Image (cartoon, rainbow, N blue to C red; front, side, top):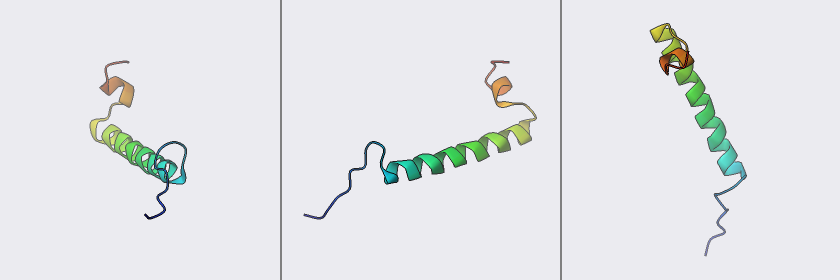
Amino acid sequence: MENQENKLGFTQFAENWNGRLAMLGFVIAVATELLTGKGILSQLGIM
């Protein structure tokens, strides 16, 4: 059987995906704010 790295917890694999998804979310949030002219909180109805 091949040597399989654990994919759960604080592993390099999980941290890489966490960073990539965080960057993607940030870019989407900024683009949405630029397109609508409203901040994220006002889009959600919080402010």
